[in-house]
Length: 390
Length: 55
Image 1: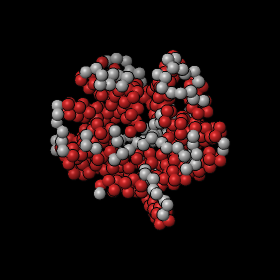
Image 2 (image 1 turned 180 degrees about the vertical axis):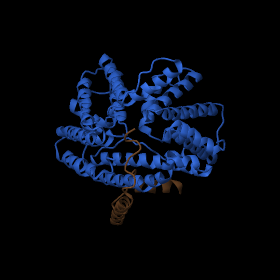
Image 3 (image 1 turned 30 degrees about the horizontal axis):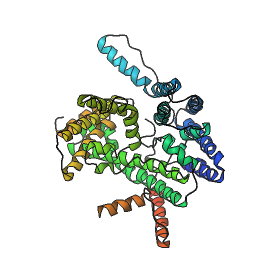
Image 4 (image 1 turned 90 degrees about the vertical axis):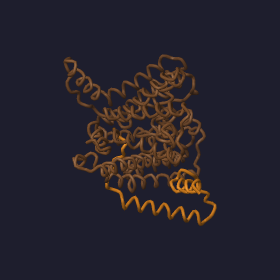
């Protein structure tokens, strides 16, 4: 969807790249902004709620206006952070929160709220709200330089990264935008990256999906231990090639503009421990969670137990960010728990040799994919069947 | 050996630049693009949704 549709290349990427390089520097941010808005309206209308999905483009207009009020230490920055959280909660988590409340109310004999239907889910809401929060928080802390309206609009409406990242930082994006020029070598690299990303998605991810999709069917309840283990392993392959392929297309598209985007993956399944895994997997998200959740909570500055708690909270947030459902929360807590165990383990002076550490990390991550890929009861059933207790 | 393999795979994936001063390398890259395009056309259409796009 979107990056593997011909319309992405013919209506958006190729015309915008051509116009971008043909126009004088002062118009370049406006080229990105106009195509970004058109991109959001077009795909919002087609795939994300029709008219109302397209109308959500006004969120960007509002954010651009409010961002003009941001100053270091200003309350407007807090307003910007809160409004981004409200947007994210209202569109993504309201239904989940009301269901969770009703479940709890049933246990405590309280009156339920009743079902709240999900409204539209704006295109890329999980990603663009994180960029809004980053800009407001960094401006509050005086970590950004003065940004013009056109530059900020180009930053949040840069369509190659709008839908699913990589999550950008203004300090990284802006200097490149201000000095951008067409680089044939970078554009060539970008074409390679886009084609490789498409191949990763269609050839590898979709092949792994032939097996991993069985996890969502009734076949799960009749499958053998080996089959379920294979399907969970296949899900690990599918999600890696799917999302790294997606990131390749986004980064390659950015390269065509002459812009270098942040990397998202660096051979994550070769990691020797879970800490290293999170420095190689979805890097732009894990660094965002570190900078805007873990560090503000106190990071590792408040003693060992407080650090453990901060890790668990940060990964619970990361889990829920991936989806408004209990299984994503458990997936986040699983990784938070692994990081706590790894921290305690390594501080006690233990370390596995690489030949054991890489498979052990891979196994721990693969168990986590069971929670990520299935609703909680199914995931627990699948894992129990694999270890032989169901 | 391992580093060279990683470098080669990253070049083929577009994550690392390729020195294209040699004509043969440029031709090789063109063939690689063609091969990737054919693979994409051959396999496209089975599943279309990206995992991370809409949650």
